[in-house]
Image: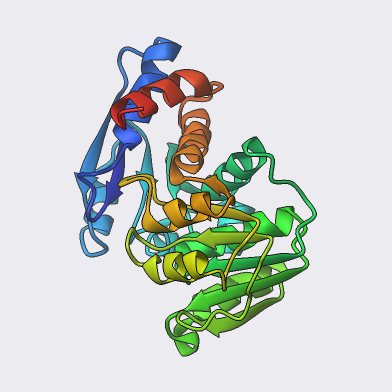
Length: 271
């Protein structure tokens, strides 16, 4: 059986390492998993080319929202979030799932970050930020603020919040309104959150906990500043690991060997 991760750019992806480690541990010697460069324009043709020898696909930027109209069935969580990071081919259907949310919750829980949370600041307004909304809903966040570059273009984020029943306040990316949130979640690429690293170092934005979804290069400037300030730091690797474990379970029908996947991923990242 075949599986792959799609996105653009995709050469950096650690997903092949994690999924191949899972297949090896599960004894699935006839399974393969690779990275395929794919943007929104190429996605329809690529999906059409996946025959009965395909188990599923992992999706990253910029495909998590673009794939939704191309699915035969979407699970409730992916619908509410407005993003699917997983496509499973089953019974002649394309079925969309979201494992980013449980992956994020598992990463936070693993670090000892538990409900209830008083205040959460989410940096970014993309598909991962929408998943973060669902994750903090599960952690019973009382107040959620999202820092976005242009509040007028945050329609997808606000729509996801309405479907999830989460009240979110928008603030501009360069003017966060929360000085000391319980949890800061950065959903933006490496380097994009450096302004928050500067503020954290200056003492005017110091959260109790940080989740930075970047896993390479690591640590980011934000994670370094948070560590120096005594903040609990959760990197992107645990989230990637647990969302990949969810994908393995969906595609293979078997329980994912999380520790074998963790060991392979850390080895690939140099520890």
